[in-house]
Image (cartoon, rainbow, N blue to C red; front, top):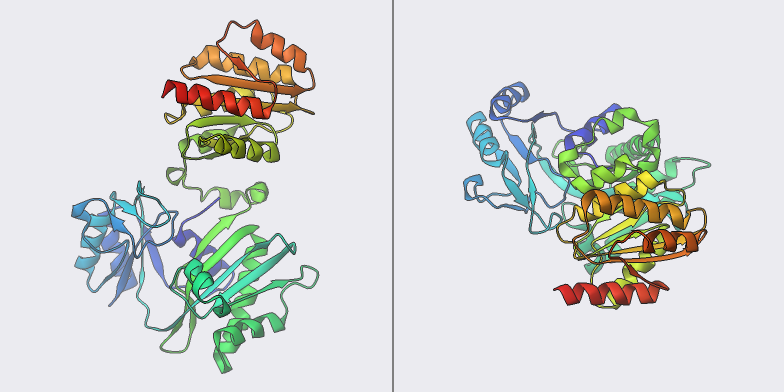
Length: 399
């Protein structure tokens, strides 16, 4: 689960990390009060969307002005003007894709006098099973570009969970960023604060880009991007309350209600599979046969008829879906349950596109019988290769 910058900074502030003063606003009327409370003389007006590259982004609407999604205002009137232009407009960045995202909220914060910009992030390193720090002197840039062009400017290290963050970790960050004296001490303190926030809130990723040194010699988190481990959210209802559903795909929201692992993609063939590995293999073989998957969907090992029905409805709600492939290997999951769920969903929402079903495993014969006797126009497949070939042929035949 992702949250907005202003929400992320509020969390960091709880743990003592240095951030600028700021106020989230949802209307032009709120903007004037927010700017007045901050006092100026410089204000930064930031679009709040779940995507990076906001400063370099462009709005689709000409009325939003030519400047990007992050703007420096030198008066309260200018703050109000920027808020009026940006609020409700669609911002397109390198991470949103061409469709962009509508800006429904903005963050107004104090301007900062910047002397240096750095990059710092934390994430779970699955290779080591530890929390890792990634730091670079090249702040304010896309870290992917830095990694590609000058990888020597990126320093990474992981923290042993048995010891937690130690003083030498702070010294490693300071050395990597070329910080000495008081700034080196600040780096150590900040590292401890960020590590406490990361582990305490079960974050999956924390990115500060840029981490700045101000002209008066203070480290400050000028931006913050945070995502959480969804499997740990049950421990943090206060974090769940920060969820902005307007930033998420409606189909993914619906899937989360039934505990389905669903990710929307850009292809034409909807997939319903049990097991993440089998789902990935199904997507791969669809691509091998010349089409693209419309989604990743894992119904899980013990899905109920209701869960399968919900999954099928979510797939058919996607207007890009031109065909559906159901691929189930019944271990814990019973093939007859899948069959009953598919039939229930088809009878409820109808079937407007080709449907290929491949069943194997527990109660497979019963599952096949249920489908064959349903009277539905379903194409049966013997194995995964056969299923992929048939659904791709059916989709291309209807194109």
